Each structure stands twice: as structure tokens, then as C-alpha cells.
Image 1 (cartoon, rainbow, N blue to C red):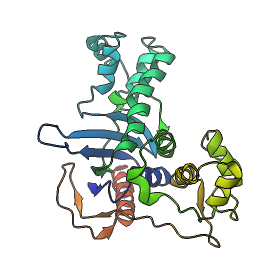
Image 2 (tube, rainbow, N blue to C red; image 1 turned 135 degrees about the horizontal axis):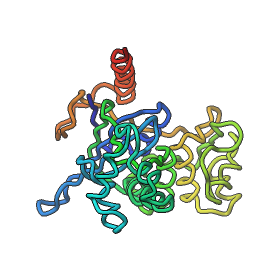
Image 3 (cartoon, helix red, strand yellow; image 1 turned 30 degrees about the vertical axis):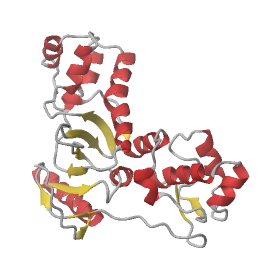
Image 4 (tube, one colour; image 1 turned 60 degrees about the horizontal axis):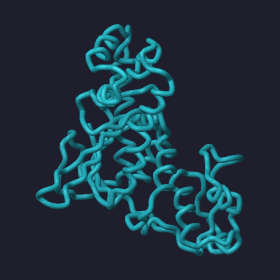
Length: 292
């Protein structure tokens, strides 16, 4: 069972925030059409487990991690296959973790694999200006594609938006300069902030507007708006109910539950969030029914 939508209607940051908050598990497929007849369409697959990104790939052949290892000359694909066959619990043990515990790959190599396989492509996804996404809540996480490391979906959002240069696709999400925000978490933020993010975070108090914060920090208002948007997208701050203008957050609406195929025609009706929540509840029902 899967659900589909359009990135123009619902940003990847909002999708990641939802999946992180509700600890969603499944396969998020992002299909980007070619710009013209000469350019092929591209699909990126993001596997999540309880709100954590565990693998990213461009194929469903369970060979992505093996290719990365063999391309670096660390192990041949045949050697990886032989070692994988020795794993007592192959469906539950990440391939990268098994290779490391077997002494075939060092921990630093495993970290590099995760950086190349997950971190870089996950951050690059935020550059997309259009595309179709499909989230399949019943897809299994492929152990052969997993290093053993994971990344919170909201952490990927923070990193991806931090390096984003063109904010045009997210211009509608930017909070207005007069908006007043307040902290949405108690104590220190659970995500690592850079120096400018930390400065803005400290001044967000439910009283100061973003314009006032920009003046106090001597930063361009656009920079403060982008930082505030990042903090909003990862759930660290929220709009203060007693101050500033409201921010409009368009909701992606879905047509129907479908398989893993893509469709070009959308008749948005039922809310995306309600549909996803229904799918998560259905997933729990299926899992509970399968338990002896």
C-alpha cells in the first residue's frame, strides 16, 4: 500500500518532519521527470525505519551498497556475497555492519560509505524544484543496502536546507519578517545547530519578530527568514499565538492509495496527513495480525 503526491504541493522538508515525528517506516520514492525528451527521468529511493533514514539508492536491486564498496576497491562483489552468506541473520543484520564485524571493512570506511550513500544524496534532494513522491508504508527495509548507521529525517532536513543555495522552490514556506516565533522544545535543541542558527534560536522568545532579530544580529532579513524556516521545518520553533502574522503552509492532498507505480494524473481530495496517519494505523494492524 502506498500514497502519492507532488513536491510542488508538499515540500520534502514537510514530508521528512512528518515521518520523523510519527516514526514512519517504509520506502519513499521520489520521481523527477526529465527536462526534455533527451533527458531520462530519475528516481531516488529513501528507506526509513522509525523516522530514521537508513539507506538511499537509485535502484531496487539491493546492490547499491555492494557497488559502492567494489567501486572503491575494498572488496570484490563476489567476496561481499560470500561474506554475506555467512551472516546468521541476513534479513535483520545490515550488510555494512556485518562486513565490519567480520573484519572486512574498517569503521572509518563504513562511515565514509554512509556519507556517500545517505548523507550526500539526501541533502541533494532538497534542491529539487518538482517531482512526484510515493511513500510505501509496507515496504521492508533492505539489509543489503544498509551500513548500520542512520540519520534522523529532520536532521537530513536541517543539513539539506543549510546548504541550499536556491530557495525559490521554498519561497512560499518562508516566514514573513513580522512573524513572532517561540521555542517548541524545552531546554537545548536536540539537533546540532551552526553558529548563526544558534544565535537566532537564542533570540526567539515569543516576543521579538524576525525583523527585530535580524536587526539585533545585524544579519540580512532573508538570512534570518531562511534560518527560521529551517528551525520550523525540524520542529524546534513554532509560531507564537499572540504575535506576528500567520504563515501559510500548503498541504499536499492525495488522490488514492496505489502501488509503487507512478501516475501523472492527480485528483487531490483527502488530506495528505490524514491519509498517511491511516496508513500508519493500517501498518500496525497488519503487523499485529501477523504476530502469532
